[in-house]
Length: 333
Ligand code: ACO
View 1 (spheres, rainbow, N blue to C red):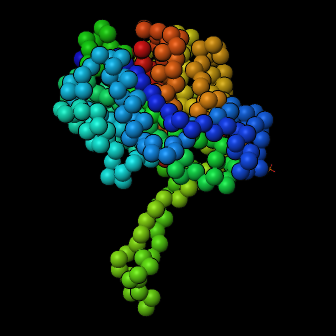
View 2: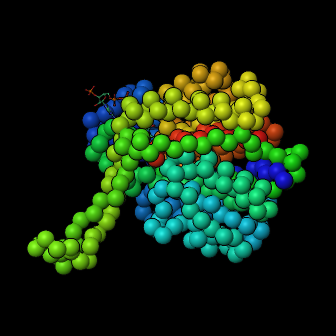
View 3: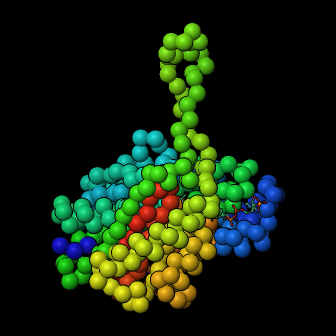
C-alpha cells in the first residue's frame, strides 16, 4: 500500500513586521538581519487571530485542492509546539473543520514537526490501512519570543501549512526514504522551558512542601545561534543523503530541495554540500522568517500554487530544530 501527497494549503497572519520595524525596538538593522539570515519580513498573530484559525484556513485549502470532503478525513495530525490549548490543538481543529469521523492528535517536535507528521501519516496509511490523513504544521513562536533580545526576535514568524496524505497503489507511491533523529544533549542550545513559581497565596515558608505546588509558564526562546547553525549544516546534509540512499535516488535526480526555512545561509550551505543548484532550492523565508513547523508546508504551498513545483516532481525535504531533532524525507508531489 502506497501513500502520496494530493493537496496543500497555507495561511499567515495579517500583520507584517519588517526588519525596519524591529530596528525601532532593538539595536539592529535591515542590512544586518538580511545579510545574516536572508529574512526581510515576518508575519505575527495579532488581534483576534489564533493559531487554530490559521491551521483551519490552511487545512481547508488543502482539502479543497485534494477534493476530499471533511467527513472522509480519518486522522488529523496537528504538528505544533505552540498550541492554543495546553491539552492539544488537534481536536479543536477537527471540530472547526467539521471532520466528524477523524481522530485528531498533536505532534510536538518544533521545526521538525512537519516531517515527523508526514512520517506518522505514512505509517498510519501503510500500517493501519487508513485512507486520508491531514497533516498540519503550524506555529506561533512570536508568543515565546523575547522582543528585547535581538539575537532571537529577528528570526521568527507565525504561519500554518497543511497537506493531505492519501492511500494509493504502490505504483503511485510518493513518500519514501525517511530518516529521523533526536539529540537531547543539544537541548541546551535551543529551548523554551517550563518555569514555575510558588503560588502566592498558600505557599508555606517553614520548609515543608508548599500547596498548591506551583504555577507554571514557559520561558521565552533561549538559543545559542552559532551552535544551532553548526548543528544544522552538519546534520541536515547527512540526513538527506541517508534518505536518498534509502529511496535509491541520487541527489542529481532531485527536482527540489525543501528545507525548514530557518536561515538562508543554512539552506545555501546544505544545497552546496548536496550539489543542488540554486534554481532547484525552495526559499521563501525572506517574507516570513522562521515559522517552525509551518515553514515547510507554507513554502511547498507557495511553490505549488505558483506552478513551480509540478505533479511528479521529487522533493528532498528536511526539518531541524529544537530538541534537538532533525529528519528528512523524499517525497513526490
Ligand atoms: N542585529 C545586529 N547585531 C546582532 C544581532 C542583530 N539582530 N544579533 C546579534 N548581533 C551581534 C551580536 O551581539 C554579536 O556582536 P559581538 O560580536 O559584538 O558580540 C555579533 O552580532 C555576532 O553575533 P552572532 O550570534 O555570532 O551572529 P551569527 O552570525 O551567528 O548570526 C544568527 C546569528 C542569525 C542567530 C545565526 O547564528 C543563526 O541563524 N543560527 C541558527 C539559528 C536557527 O536557525 N534557529 C532556529 C532553529 S529552528 C527551531 O527549532 C526553533
